[in-house]
Length: 285
Image (spheres, rainbow, N blue to C red):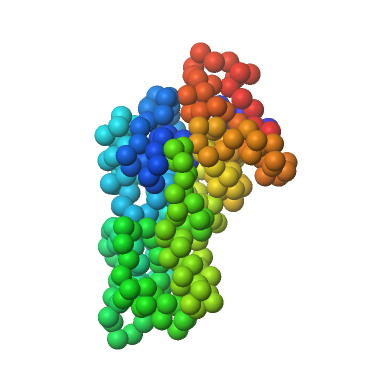
């Protein structure tokens, strides 16, 4: 069995875990009790921390900047979005490809930073890869070009595969998923998912943490984080400050349940405190 004191790497969800909000990526939200203290304590202890969201409209640095503005000590380099993880995968698995991004800065900024060539909707040749992310609006030209490229054989990715976003203050439609579904409807081709809880994201996070999976814990308020931990071979910590409820946990089969259930990240911070004996910190099942 693994105890909390053996964990050296952490993947922390944003919405419903560190922040209470109704908008993806922590935007417009407020820090949950204990979130700032937990982040500061993990950094002081020399632990490796990644803050990870399924948001993909903005670049990672923009989300990190917002979290700092509400008192959460998060560095740009520690923030991973579904968009940046998907682009990281494309960079590794499609070298030299021309990529059509149907989305906003959450895709275009990582594509530029990684030196990936972007395709345009008006290009004579279809793109080699199509990736769909979040945006405030989408153009008919981009959607048509994306569908034509996928129908011609382009690799097809979407940042999220879920229908709904839940940040602790109700839910809203994951519009990028609906856009990707429209391309699937037109072409019959389903996209690979780059965000939670996909193996694509799991592999990207493990590369960044550079730790054995048994020394990593994924903390979040949704089923997606539990599944992500399983894909990583890591431990899962569910917090009841967002989407998950005790009733949800009761309905889970043993292989679906998280390794540890806590009220919120404030409880996790308390359990990791230096004054807390190891026997009281928590042991993963």
